[in-house]
Image (spheres, rainbow, N blue to C red):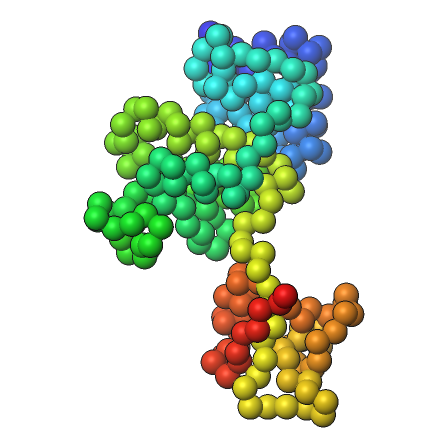
Length: 247
């Protein structure tokens, strides 16, 4: 049974028309699908890429591996939620157990190998890495494997692939924090306002960034994560600020 036949079998077993399924994918996943899309998928005239297979796997509660491989891997739980969630923290730890490296670039997680085998995998710069695959942090079911991935030992390929699938399937809100949750005050070294209001605050909107006091006002951002600070560096020069860790 090829992939198209499997997709049709799932739909028919659930008494669903192609139109109904295309509308469900539109509403649930914001997918650009119609009857033609579903028909072409079921007749193997459209590449059933990771995105489409992800829709089927999630909605019908079937194993992604069954869609790609064989009947024995099929585990249907109609409209079931994913039983095994993968957080970013767990993914990173599992990747490092495999002797691989995890890093973040914009909104993409990358997994790679270290070129210099004498370098500690936990203490390496990006220039020493060769990327194997990418997983998107803002889009569910979205990932990519490049040619280096397929040069890995088959056992390692399988273990990494399973980790990728679990993370890609996990809903964005269930993946936990991607960045360090440690927070900092940013205190200006020289400038000061009356009463010690020399901390960077972000009022958002048109008000933007300014100096002020530490506050409990939930409408004002006055503590910053490491990721926030990296983003701020793209907008302003932080050389004149010192970091105070939030207790």
